[in-house]
Length: 392
Image (cartoon, rainbow, N blue to C red; front, side, top):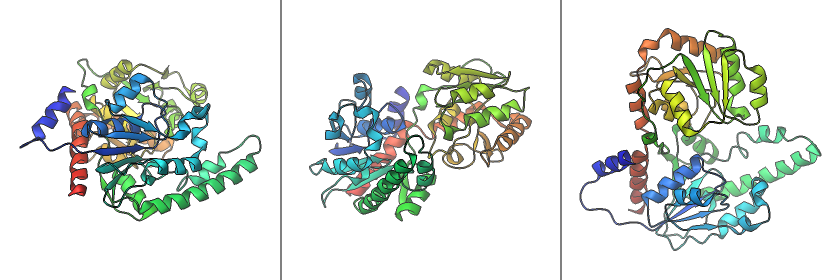
């Protein structure tokens, strides 16, 4: 936090700007993840704010961490019995509930939206700035994949219901596009998706990464590669394991757990070490000591590769999506990693081979300096400038 305060202080000049009364609207808070971290920094940037969210399943400690003392108002849906188990299926009910929040008394409305928050109703004189994590993928570019994955009992009926639900959601989603005065995307990748989906221009403000929680460490780097992730299909952990199975002379350490853990365990060769879920301190230590961090997902932004670079660790990553913006490819000035083009074990393996051949091109300071450009202080400064510009 000292690093954040110091950077913010160094940017300040002249008299402090008056605090704004901001209504912060967030889709939902099922846990403490990237979206909640963005809300946390929004509330810290605007201390006179109030937070509105459809569902709040946080613990008391997590809630206090996110809100920083700001009041939180939840929707009526949050009181439904057992809703934590099925809230994701209430998409159409959520479109109504988000419109029930009365935010019209705030000076400005700032929504944090991956699906619903941008649909909040504002008054004509209120600027509404929407920070978009992504247009709802399950309703737009991934809708066919989402529906095709529905199986089990009455699969045909579930698919028909899902198609109707997505059709109705898309109509609502398009209707709410015009209610936003200014769009902010969390990456250039999402800026392009906003244009493709809604035909609206967007400013890019990268999300906050708490780089102050990571450092270079003191010991030498060791001869192992590292990856850490929830083991869900789009993270492609089995693909990473397959690439290193083909290189038995290279060690891979894997942290994380999830639905694909059994598949990963069955694939892993003798050179693969599976840690399961580990505490933060262990995660940071592995990033400080690994030869490189491996990341194969196509993310809208991707916080973990930035955290790895904050530890001075180069990143081998897909050259599409957010990592194409946060990792400097071999051949650029001060490279911080190597890109691969396709999500295949062969392409990833070839990137590992290139990295091995060019180890001397990477250094820890370049990696950390690149990570610092995505820090919390930068996010808060750019966000406040954006909001005040819209008010002006």
